[in-house]
Length: 371
Image (tube, rainbow, N blue to C red; front, side, top):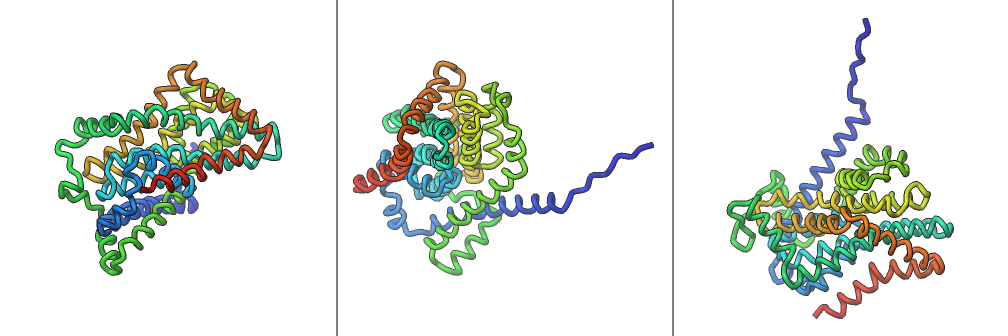
């Protein structure tokens, strides 16, 4: 008679679980520290910092530039949620930042494509895959940004959903409502009271937020995504909705579309999949990355939950524009392929495209519109 072996957790597994819990704890604490320190800042200081976002066009490019510099839309979206929850930023101001973050996050994919610059054929494929993510977000923004600016399309839809399904009596910080207190709030209060420099703790909160997302992303990548990525093949990306689903769940697991879409650049560059095959995955990755903004559910404020919904709605509407309709779904890959062919003729143009799109143009527009 044979007996089944009893599987016991190994030391590496226990270490992985402990690291994940520590990363999650750090993530929650960083959000609370951000929210509390922002609330303690003098209102005139806060207004001066975020005055530029009153112009939606400037807010859009602030989102692009900030995300390009940090290279993490998850970090920026979590920061925006904390800003809205603390009352330092209105929902209307936050929406363009979220849109800009979706464009800025594609920088990493473009940088990854530059690693193939010495291989002409592979570089063309890699850059085409990178700009495919750019084009999807830029086209979606081009459609939704005017609707938001002139009609409040996304913000009003999010408010409606909040009123209808989430909160019976929604409140906001402006109403004098005190947001939900995390179990770590006493720690945040003690730190700020011990050293009464709210701006310092704001910076510390941003650093801790970035580090926590990096820890969680790396853990999820090593344990979930990397093994699957090694087995990636044409068959895997052959069915659009399967690729879409894997894009959603793998990106939600690692909390970073920059990681998953950067891997896709390598998949395309090495000939394992075509642009048409990986496009549904990229669409899914954009939805999966919105999980980070779900931390807004920890706040009982209408605006905080609404901005999390805006992040989701922006990417979901983009998915609905392209995914169900093959003729439309094929447009961004064709544009990306044509762009890649032009860039590969003069590789310096590729570098110029990255610098202009993510740094020079946003900075100049912010600078000349600061007043």
